[in-house]
Amino acid sequence: MGLESTSIRLLYHALQMGDFHFSLDLGYRLPLYSNETYGGGDTLVLGDAGEEAHAGLIVSYFEPQYLNSFTTAVTFRNPGASLSSEVLYYLEGALDFKSFALVANYNGILSLNNDGAAGAKPAIENSPSNLYNSKNRELTAAWAALQFKVAQHWRADLKAEAILTGES
Image (cartoon, rainbow, N blue to C red):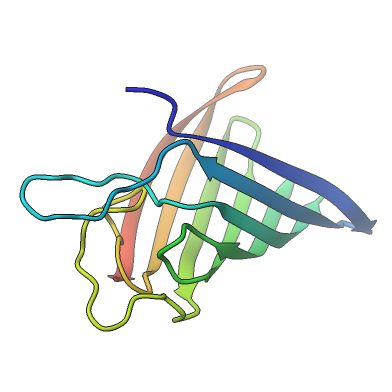
């Protein structure tokens, strides 16, 4: 056991136009390990080998009278050494009431289909998640939550999530 990776993420609130807020999202991840070539058998390879970087734009609308919000984001991600570049996206809306909130989210990953592997690539469980783990991965998911106010600065979530589509 040990440290898996180190990363830095910068969020910069770039501009406000009325109730709209525009932010930049920049990040870099450096794994502290390298994957050896998968040789079959019982070997389990975890994590994406290679550096990772992302850059994105977040646009949020906050309805000031009731504190309702809508946020969308699009991010370009250049993942580990053996995976295709990707576009990550999400849409999220929240209806905020005095003691609870209703939140819904739709998100996904679009592959840019530039995986460096020629031909078929074996599914070797080499990503942070087993939901998608190989060549030109794509995913769409949705979730909804009911958030309850527990104390002045605390909320508890009751959340349901579904993976709608996934391909690797």
